[in-house]
Length: 434
Image 1: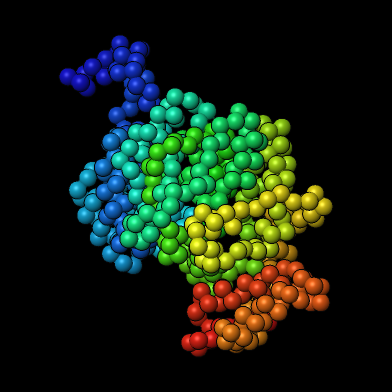
Image 2: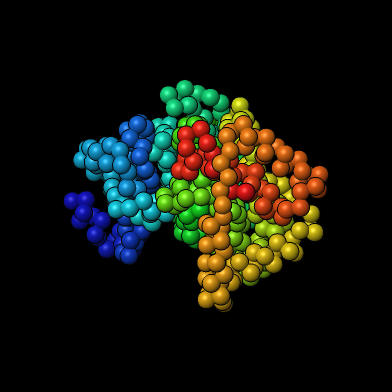
């Protein structure tokens, strides 16, 4: 009887008679019977917390959703947990990658499988409150200009005990896209909005999902701000685990790089360069119209500290006692216009070199990679390394050390990368390239 009514000509002409809902319509003008929200859970070796994550999704008061799980070639018991839940609930669609495709690619994979107008990412280490979907969907449905809605975030430890309520959440409700973009660049410390909230899927597709490099979530959030508004709800709706074993913001350069490239042997020299290229790309992709793209591109140069961002200078987050203080150490501020022109030229050469001179680019890049890999190693104990590092920084600051500034920063951070890799030198030693 119900199928006969939905197929009637009257409802094809007047779809509001089918219930007056605001869900997408099919080619006949009839509301689709597909779920309204897609939830994507990218997974990699998350067996200890995955059950709690999935239970929080299945306990949502808004039950009209599909749950998409992508196992990124896990080697623990993750797949057994996924299969058990998939057999239990038909709303779950699971996929398994044959090889590790990288964190960003796996997160994008679940988003590309989405079939609903609203989408939510959820890390396999975290969980959400029962009303997250219901409360987050209301502002998105009420205002088409809103592209992201999320509640407050409670930081927890590995045992699930509360640490603190994250203080970095913010609204971006200005009608001016550049004002929203500026607010994101100034106040975004962690990628919590993507994990804590619900996103309008067409805006996510317009930004191109998540690329596969460090801090790619910041690039996507900046792109979403150029498209629409962010609304923050006052209630705690998301619980995020804050520990070096599960939070990428607390990991070293090499360990972070291996999240995106599992076979990485060393941290990249200019670890923040892909993010800055991404910021330039999203400024050209997200806005509509030539004038809007030009304004967004100018804002990208204005709100970037190129000296620190390109060279990858980074605070030792694990030494900061409070999670909010550690997150704030990731943020950058504005810079003098004096540095914009040379770094803009450098970025332009790097971005367009592979397009216009592919053979020359590959030749010189290959020679540089061979030279970098052939450098001699010096083995130092941790105490010797600490003393050498302190001396290096003090001499560089005083001008007594005649080294390019990029080399100074790479040497200063080599200890963290070498210690994280634990592949060179004997136990108790750290391999440092001079």
